[in-house]
Image 1 (cartoon, helix red, strand yellow):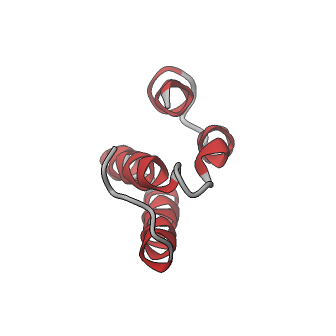
Image 2 (cartoon, helix red, strand yellow; image 1 turned 60 degrees about the horizontal axis):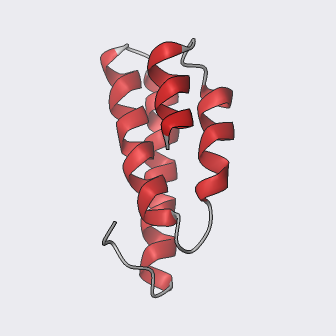
Length: 77
């Protein structure tokens, strides 16, 4: 989790670095975290006026929500 925040706020905020940090959360138990962190990334890029990156992470958030709905993954973190 901290790797994602570090990639966003401390390092350059490149989309690839953030996605690399998020990749470990693409598991059944990690999807709720993935969803929340993708939203944080999308909001970060929106504030930074990087709309293409923002839209990318909003889409990733929606994909995580779909995975949560398909499975029996809990939203409780």
